[in-house]
Length: 292
Image (tube, rainbow, N blue to C red):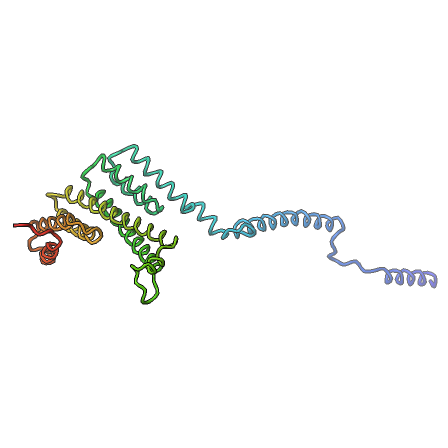
């Protein structure tokens, strides 16, 4: 009995020394399977993060010098302004090739060239349109307005050249500009160069205004007998007056007077009728007096 009790006591002591197994402990093979799955999922997480990181560089423009996604989308859907303008020009040229009498295509193409600051191409386009439709009022009006704008630019350039010459030719107070000393102040190479530029600019401004006047003369002739003639005659008269101021030639005064008189025939009680009559009286002073 004593021996049996001693053996039972030893078994209880050994059992107490052994660690108790947790009831819900995961078997070792399940633990290995769990970490294996974790490693596989982690690999795809790494790949996903890498893709997101790379996409961030592209969309945000990191290191590319661009504005990011806005620039990318803008270039994708709209293209650069230069490319878009060139493509529109090419499109209009194709329209004209397919239908040389498509006035709208000529006008649109001329506008695109003006946006491109290529005035020569714009005027050449409109002149080409007039070869197939010589009396197209829209084309003639646009062409005349371009020539007028060129004339105004030439006048500003001439004024600037004259101002530069006057500043360079300044003589000291009390010195007669016609004296030997006064002429010495204007005989230097710089003054001579500025004088040549001013003379050239004045010649160009006269040519530009005469060309613009011719443009409105063509418009008035084409508009004759139409509902647009009255306005065309007023535009011609105004342009002829401006040309008169630049050149001082009586021929431009005669042209302005004739245009105003034609306007009065069309609209004797028009809005500009009173002003037209007053201007005719003023322009008469520029005409040579007839000998009796």
